[in-house]
Amino acid sequence: MSSSHRPIVFSAAQPTGQLTLGNYLGALLPWTRLQEEHDCLFCVVDLHALTVRQDPVEFRERVLDLAALYLACGIDPERSVIFVQSHVSAHAELAWLLSTFTMMGELERMTQFKDKAHRHANNINAGLFTYPVLMAADILLYGTHKVPVGEDQKQHLELARDVALRFNGIHGPLLRVPEPLVTGGGAARIKDLQDPTKKMSKSVESDLAKVMILDEPESILKKFKKAVTDSLGVVRDDEANQPGVVNLLNIWRAARGATMEEALAHFAHNQYGRLKVETAEAVIELLEPVRLRFREWRADAGALDAVLERGGILAGERAEGTMRKVMNALGMPLNRRRFVMGLSDQ
Ligand code: TRP
Image: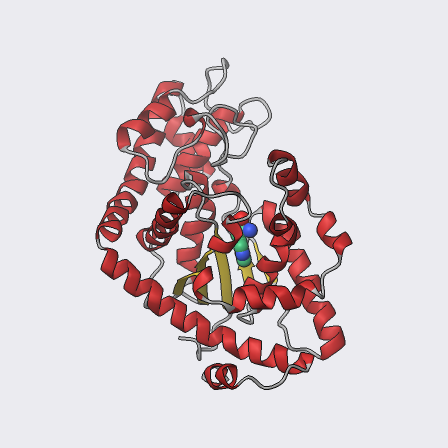
């Protein structure tokens, strides 16, 4: 797997809360397609999630939930590496080393830090501040070529590039400088069902605003029936005046694999009621198999553990190769354990 010449892709999500239909269409589904032609690593970044206080009992379950969700969505452990960040200690270690190549000013500029510091004003811990350094380590450890990221993570990826370039400028070209990969596109830009001018977000309060990947069919139907539209009464592709209708059209065609022309033809002369119900039906059909596979994986703790253990070993071996080179370049004395493990990747 790792010895192939396919470009290396790394991506990750935090095990906090459930993921939405927007996450599915914009991230998880595109990830499964990348497996065809790339050497992919998909990580559950538990260390990142610790920057916000977690209940330990709940947290362990959320980590397993997310790993099971990756599998349920179609990430194939025979083709891709699925693993938990904390299982590969090199992530935290490289993050430390890279923090000495990251400037305070760079981290202070991160809009997500400013935003999170504002939202968690009583817990502005240093981890929240150095979060992007750990993310840079995640990516740079594997010689990643491409990183599928959403708009909100572009600034972090840019920082990872800057850190790699700075390191390389001083110590030679050891770290591959990653490129962003824009996945999804128009049809995957799913909006909030209650406020269709905003992106559908898992952190929004209202249950009606977001469809979760694991929602039951009845709940999906209810949410779409209550989706906010407008009073114009015609199904048109007019984002400025009818954001709710356009969002439903986009969701329907993403779920059905149809173009906007096909969607408009399909719903011409229809009331909004039919658009809402048919969109709900398309989403239910799309998510049902994912929910069922998720349950199967979650019911088989042994199988899930086995996948994660193997993923951790595969990722760990590959990470060691980078650690060995970086530590050597920085002038650290040879570490025999690292040397032996990291060689398998070379
Ligand atoms: N920060 C990302 C998010 O919250 C998650 C993440 C951590 C990530 N490390 C990464 C994404 C490396 C891509 C690559 O969405």
